[in-house]
Length: 126
Image (cartoon, rainbow, N blue to C red):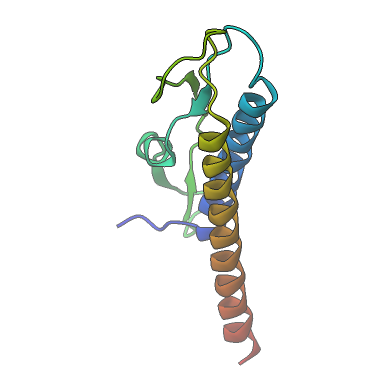
């Protein structure tokens, strides 16, 4: 079983959430642009599927694990509702719901990292 560095995984998810928030902000900013198609980022699960955790020896007797860097694909999103007369597919309500999901995910990510950090700090004080 390969070790997974929680801090690296949390940082990768934070970068993914940042890119998703930028895509959502771009959608909202172009809500009135004729012909604009909404964009979204691929799910984080797909990013994790492409990431490979491997053990690499840096020195004799030492092992460390690391995840490969994965790019995030921003893709046009299929409209889930009626296309506007201006041929625009942005629904501000949907974008605000996505922004709320990103905020909650950032908060969960931060809470997990803080808890893990506290646990490490408590184990080193003993």
